[in-house]
Length: 114
Length: 115
Image (cartoon, rainbow over all chains, first blue to last red; front, side, top):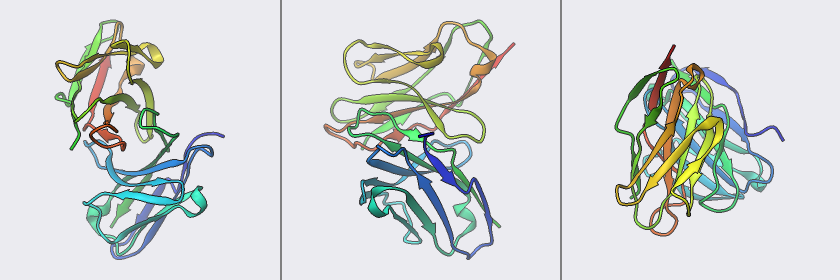
């Protein structure tokens, strides 16, 4: 296993279009996180899965955002009706059981909304 | 709610000199603390963590960090900086006992090591 992978690495889309990102976590990790990062800021939490269950979602997350993790394996993050403010780096991370385990991050998907 | 503060946006040091990147936290209960590094256009990489026990923890690439409960700090240190250490550094906290098990990150500190 080579780590967490995200696809695509870059996405340019027109305002109003829908986009979907994919994350493949480390296979034995049951926890999966999505974060958003903008320039000069740290990762901002979006949502969290334990296996296939979405256990937590940021209150800041617009209802245009939805995430799934079917069968507790890969995850997808969809943004509907994109806006320019959605432009950011979207990071996926996975970790093992326990809050004391470190997260392993993918390289991220950079979204640009024009 | 738990939070992390990194009071310096940027730290500049000369190669060979010691470096310190500061982090303070706020949680209910006992914290688990982490440091990550991010190189340009890359995801975050884990450096080290404090869970319990010895307040001085050692991690990758010669980095270490000191947990200070009374000052609620977890500063990252390295005795001798390298130019290749130049990157963004993020402190993170989880606190399953009284806060959240989901990592909360600081806004990051840009470390610049000049020759």
